[in-house]
Length: 162
Ligand code: ZN
Image (cartoon, rainbow, N blue to C red):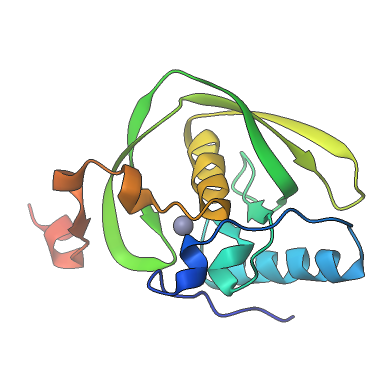
């Protein structure tokens, strides 16, 4: 099982707009598979190809049951409704968290690994993950959208303090 190394957000590739996948071939399927392995290895809930240095529009994410099953090629945020502020972090910015306003419910369209068009309607946590990952494809990081004064390093002792 191969997995990639997740790049730090100071790497310029994290700020580039990723290219659409032109053809879903063996290479793309392999990238998606390895992305999934990487997400599991890093205990993430989602991962976008640019985070491992691949500037293509491919994301993986856990599904509603928290199982690492979702893959979307060229995902597009079609509709978004409501707003919800929630805590967020990023595998590319280890240890930093903040409150980020996101749409409460989204509809995302993209292709699966067979090249079939798929539609995902998600709310709450999964909606947040999808928005976070699609942002990565456009070179946007959660720190760009976070309420600045809520951004902070997570200190475990602090969380345990009573
Ligand atoms: Zn991220």
